[in-house]
Structures are given as C-alpha cells and as structure tokens.
Image 1 (cartoon, rainbow, N blue to C red):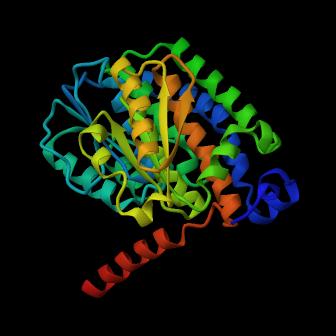
Image 2: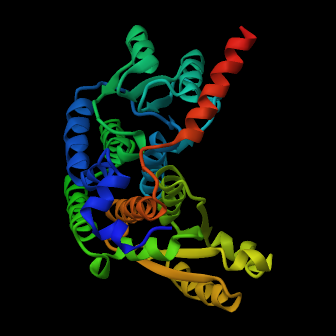
Image 3: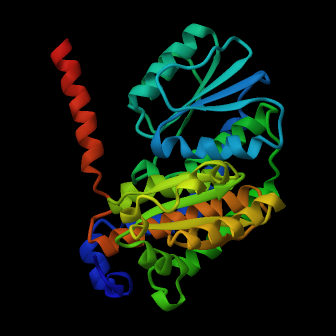
Amino acid sequence: MGDDAALDDAARRAAIDPGSFGQLVAGLPEQAAEAWDAGHEWASSLTLPEPRRVVVAGMGGSAIGAEMVAALGSSRTTTPIEVLRDYTPPAMDADSLFVACSFSGNTEEVLAAFDAAGTLGATRVAVTTGGKLGKRAAEAGVPTFSFTFAGPPRTALGYGVLPLLALLRATGVLAVDDHEVAEAIKLLKRCSEAAHPDVPTSSNSPKQIARRLAGRIPVVVGPGMLRVAASRWAGVIPENASQWALSAELPELDHNLVAGFALPAAAVDQLHVVLLDGNGVHPRNRRRVEITAEELGRAGVSCEVVYVEGSGGLDSVLHAAYIGDWVSYYLALLNGVDPFEVAPIDRVKAALAAHDNTMA
C-alpha cells in the first residue's frame, strides 16, 4: 500500500500515473458540456418516430451512462428504457428504438445485438468513435453519433450519458431541461475543484475515502437511483485501482444481505462499506441508510455514509458517480498501479479471439 505522499506529492503521482489519467478524470465537467452540445445538435437533426420501447446495448464504461439515463427515466416516462449487457436483445419490433453504444465500436456483445436488432425490425441508432460498429451503421444507413475522445471508455462518462439524453429528448421519450443539464455540469465542476489532486488529503474527501478503502474490499450501497452510482464505483475501482469492489442497493439489501454481515468472521475486517445518501432518496430509504450503518457497526464491519449533493436527479447521480471516479483514481495511486492498465480485461478479449481463430 502507498501513503499520503502518493496522493499529495506531484512527482510521486506522475511516477505512478505517467499517462496523466488524473487529467482525464478532472476533465469530466468540460467533457460533459461538449457532449451535451454535440449530442443536442446531432439529435435535433434526426427524424425518428417516438418509440414505444427503448433498448440500449453497451458493456462496461459504455453501458453505465445508459443505466443512469434509464434510472432517470424510470420516474419521468412510461416508455420502458432497458439496458442490454449481453449478446441477444429482447423481443423488439418497428415501434422499438435500439441504441448501440460502443466506445471502440468493436464490442462483440454490442455488435451481435446491433445485427439482431436490425433483423427484428427495430429502429437503430449508434453511439461510437468508429470501429466495426461505425462501419456497419454507415453501411446500413443507421444514424450515428460519432465522437472522438483520447482516453479509455470509463473516462468518457459524459459521452455515455448526455448524447443519449439528447436523443431521447428529441424522440419525445424523456423530458430533459437545459437548465437541469447546466446545473449538473456546474456540480461536476465544483466536485472536480474540490477533489483535484492539488487539493491536499486533509481537505480532499475522495482522497480520505480512498485511504479508508485501501487494503480492503469496498462494498458500495446505493438507495434508489443512486444504486447506479454504486454500480459505477464497483466498476471503476477494479479497472482503475486493480482492486476488488462490490455494490448493493437499498432497500433490497435489508431483505437479505443484512442477515449475513457478521460471517465469515475472517471477512469482516476486510470489508469497508460506503453507503450513498442524498436529496431525492425516498425518506424510508434515508432512514434505512442510518439503520443499515448501525447493523454494520453491530457486526463489526467498518462503514461510512457519503452524502451526495444535488437535487436528487441528473445532478445527484452524476455527482455520486464522479466521487467514485476520484476515489478509484486515488486508490490506484495508493496501490501503486497505473490506472490505465487493464491487463486482465485484455487477456480475456485475447483468449476469446484465440478461441474464435481455433474454431475457424
């Protein structure tokens, strides 16, 4: 494990993060503003029917933005918005809108679902930087939001959320106010300033959280819409910090997992639970956060509550996710690992490709 010098000393940070991953994390507010402007311009140029069902396909960093949009839409539209993290889409027809999201354009699950959605007769749209998806979409005459971004998919959250929001607004599925987006971006800017690497650990909340998570297994719990942010934490911590992380949601946790907090005893000291809370969370779930923290303490499991700013809508879920992004970056520094490196993911992809070549 590292120490505070890895967090607060610029030279130490640069030695661990030679590719300046931290700059990509810090750039999310500007990225989000650019993604919204570009997405709005693109979506406004389309002529698409209002769908009766929306299915968004994506994996990893290309899917979490869709999860946020779906969570936001759950209380705003009667049109179902589903997120597909697999090869085979659900039943669809001409009244369905299928959105293929792949940062690289080469995600095999998304490509398979894209082809299948076309066979089913769904209206298709693509969001990508290019690759095979960009090529197939162009050949099929499928509207495509094409963008360029110099970073891994997990650092392109703005492009995962805002163009999709713009698309669903343009098709009449989801009401999104420009002011709401502007306020969310303002909150991201404030978070970036407060969590910036130049802010010392003594005044930097994500650095402090990372110190408490170092050497432990984080379990991030989100009530209501914040469950998506908890899932984001559990995704970026392994990718950026090469460390286990899990997520759970309230109130479901209080109907099962709460009964298992104390065992196995050997695991208790290895866990640190982060409970997310904030405006917009159902009052009963806010009380559940308090009660669950008490139960964790009773079982001897260390925990803390992280309060999320915002109105409880888009701003809050983005802010909650962004805190997790910063925490994951600082955990990478404490773990002494380059946050760009994802060798196990690359090995899985290579093994699948080798299998395909063997079967050919």
